[in-house]
Image 1 (cartoon, rainbow, N blue to C red):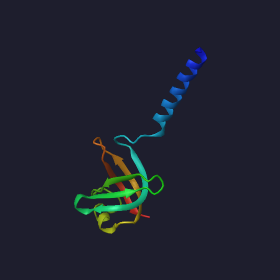
Image 2 (cartoon, helix red, strand yellow):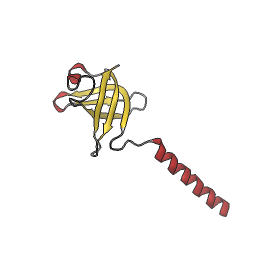
Image 3 (cartoon, helix red, strand yellow):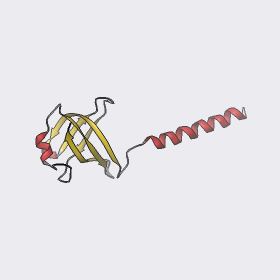
Image 4 (cartoon, helix red, strand yellow):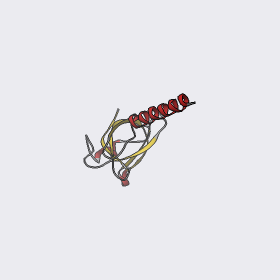
Length: 103
């Protein structure tokens, strides 16, 4: 009985360490991404993207600091374009694009 109890604790500690090392994007992290444009909201400087592999949908905010072309990037994007780039997560949990370009 004591061996089972110790084994359970070891498994729980392993899973906790694994969970923490897998990577949850937190404020300040730079996260690479790629996907397909689902929606471009030029008036709000936002682009909705879907990762075709994981089916995850997310929205990135484009600013004038977004590489390579800043806000001009929005004018070049349309639905179903394949894109890639990097975003950072703000303290409020928003994704701000550092890089955004067509594939």
